[in-house]
Length: 417
Image (cartoon, rainbow, N blue to C red; front, side, top):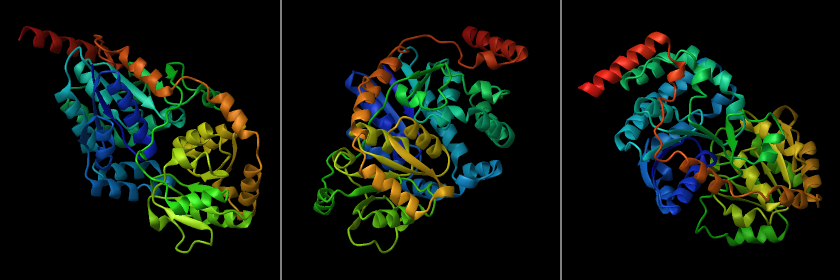
C-alpha cells in the first residue's frame, strides 16, 4: 500500500502524522509526507519519503503571521491565506497527490480542516481518503469554518477545484463529512470529558509523537529537575498570548519553584529570568515530563497527552482556539486545572501550581486512564482497511442532479475515448 499524507501547523499538528507514517512504514507500506520544509529531516529519520510544501523561510513567516488570528474576524483569514500563499499550497498538494496516485494501491491521508487537498484529490481520483483530527475542536468548529469558507474563500477554493476538473462546492458543511474515514487521535476518556466527536468518527487513542530522538538532556536541566522544577512551555508555534510566559514565570517565582522554559523562539521569553529559571530551545519531553513537579502549558493536546502519560500534574493557561476546550476536558477528567486568559493573575496561577505540586493522586488517575491500546497502531490498522478498495467519488452525494448527469457523461466519454 502507498500512503500519501498531508498536514500543516506546528509540531503538535505534524509529529503525530510522522509517528503514524513511521508505524505504517514498519508495517510494510510506502509512505510519503507532504508538509512544511523544516520537518523534512524528522520525516526522513522515520523512513518516510518527503515533499516540502514551502521553504523554511516561508514557514517561519507563516508562524509569525499567526498570533493576530487569535482575535481575527472572518475577513482576516482570507488575507492570511493570500499573504502566505496557502491557496497555491492547496493546489500544489492536490497535484502532487494526483501525480503519485496508483489506482488500487494508494490511500490519501490528511489533517482535518487544513488538508483540503486530500479530499479534493480523492474526489478527482475516486481514491480512498482519510481525514485525521488531532484535537476535538476541529469537529466542534466544523460549521463555523464551513461558513467562513462559504462566505470568504469559496471563489478561490472553487477555482482550485475547477482546475482539478471538479464542480463547485455548494454545501461546505456537508463537504466536511465527505471523507471515507474520519479518525480522531485522542482517547475515549478525553472525548467523554467534553462534547463528543460526531458519530462518523472513530477514536484511535492517544499518539505520542516526539521530535527529540537523540536529544540529550542538558546538565543545567538535569540540575533543575533534581530540585523539583516546574516545566513551562507554550508549544513550538507563535500562536500564543503575549503574556503567557511573563505570568507563568512570575507565578513559578511566587510559588518558590525553579523552572525549565522549553521555548523554540527566544524572543517570546522575558529577557531576564529569575534565579533558578533557565530557557532551553528544546528538551526531550519523554525524559523531562516524568521528572518535573508539574507542567504549566498553553493547552496544546500534544503536551497535555504527554503529561497525562507521565502522570504529571498540569496547569493550563488557555487562550484561543482549542486550548480552553482542552483545558476544560483535562479538568473534568481530574487531571489538572486551567484558567482562561481573562483570569490570568499571578497569585491565582501560583496557587494552582502549588496545588499541582502537592497533588499525589494525579499519577494514579492518569495510570488508570492510559491503559488503552497504542493509538498509532490502531490508526494504522484503520488506514489499512481502505487499502485496495475501489470507492465511489467521496463527495458525489453533494452534487446537484444536473452535476451528477454531467459527471456521468464525462466518465462515459472518458471510458470510450
